[in-house]
Image 1 (cartoon, rainbow, N blue to C red):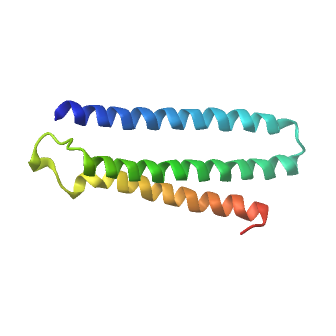
Image 2: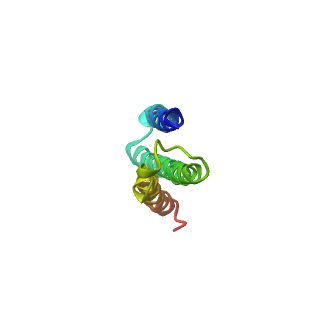
Image 3: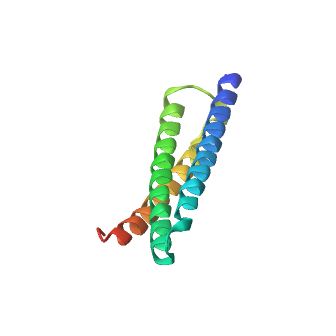
Length: 117
């Protein structure tokens, strides 16, 4: 049981770090392309880009939290039955809540600038 528990945590943390680093690099590269634009257009596109990235990261966090809960419900990963409980579900629930907040903020930011919301 213990190795399964360790590998699950290793996978979740590694994947989270890889996604965040990739998002930062992509965001930075796209933002650098906006340097040649006039100030008004640069600000508009930067805000829109931030909204899009918040939407994407929000969706990934919600999906990650959901998959994490499903995995813990279907696979026995705990070292002993005494360690099982609701507290095991708190990290994926927090991850999902952060994803929902990011998604809503990104939707407002992206939607308002496009006039759709």
